[in-house]
Image 1 (tube, rainbow, N blue to C red):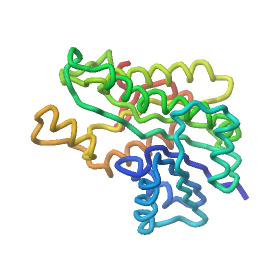
Image 2 (spheres, helix red, strand yellow):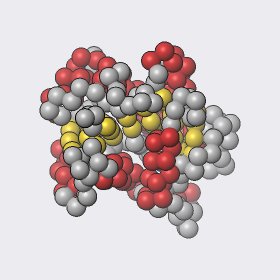
Image 3 (cartoon, one colour):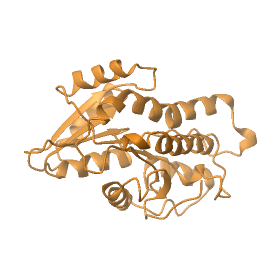
Image 4 (tube, rainbow, N blue to C red):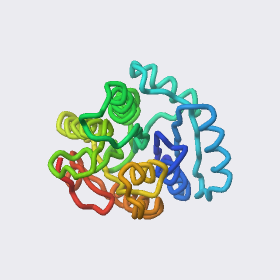
Length: 256
């Protein structure tokens, strides 16, 4: 009998991250590991999860971990295994945590805003991947291990929008570079690495951006619509179809 598909989702206590946790739990034989950064976030997610439908043999783990701090691979694995009853592989790692101090013109961006944004939007996904890669190499998935980062069209240089993106934009540009480089450099390992734009979604961050831009209509996408698109892309992702690419929730490729 095949082992459960193991999904690890960071930033899982709200918005799209929580939607992914809930949806994956509905699938049969799924082990979902939701990673949050505080005890209060863990408590909140456990309370919400009481109302989640679970597929047959599906399991939820919620762990508090701060992979933004430098960790050796062994330390990362030890932290993960201690909180997940010794799971020995990861099939899909999704980094959905994000930080957006304000959507200001570039000339107004402060050094502190850049540090904060790069810490969460760029460094955190990379160090999480570095810590958990030894377990991802043991993936049982036919397509191979998948590393998905929720990026943003605000990080696109090729299709830069007129709206100011503050420190958020360049931090997403940087994680896009990391995704592309991992795709190229880890081809021999079969890694599938994707920068995925979830769309402009009706989440706290989405509404915050709308307010900053004076966009009264607000974000157009519901979290449910965004999650559905994200799931389709992740499920179908292979090295040939979308690895090493910057893709929107609707399947359209975005210019770097």
